[in-house]
Length: 338
Image (cartoon, rainbow, N blue to C red; front, side, top):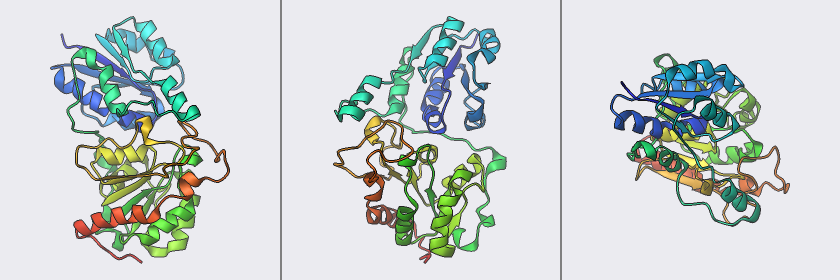
């Protein structure tokens, strides 16, 4: 009988994308294994097109909603990649062998509160993989994966003509404002880019992106709120390069092996969630170093606690644009948009 493995991660988009190497390792290295994934209903679309996952089980709010189905599967092993009260409830209710992800919360606290650099130099993906080590599986160095349903692929022929031969995707949003580039910095960066720019985000980002598009004219397309998550992922997949805040589309860009500029505000790459790329893939970490107040949070705030927001306002726009322009030069894509 095939072994059944349950992987648990309830949220959010980026965190779930970061679990994809674990899914791949289990499926490829345990012949015949059946992989189930437990998540929140909101995030199921991130997983449903993944051919390595045999079943996605969801909850809206409470674990009890899924327990009858979970119990029916008699899992051989549970890989808990969330390690919170809900995931502990699942483990206790099912009574099956398990391993739990170590969040290193004390070390994160020391980094955020006391600025002690005690986090291990290990990406969170490799720590996820360590959680699955009891199954004798390991990472393969192939990076992340993300799958888009066929019906959600965007035909770039539908975009304005100047975007059809190459563009930069600029991800404008984030869950917290202290992780988001202000409109004036986005304008500054876009003015220095030689390719047209597609602004990506949700409906909540449209007003901010509109300020950018209005300031720059036809060389910038405000696509915020115009496309679903999967369609936005398709536009990321087809971009020459991606400039992104620390958010889910940044990890989706890494999954498509795109050249990525990751822009860091109040959070820092040392927390272990920078783009997880294959060796040699181009990536620029854009951050304001030697700023004594960084990181001020492991997540983010509505406003800068210090009031100056230097972690974003002091970003080196020229460095970001030069990195992207070199890529466009190397691929022979230079629309000279402005």
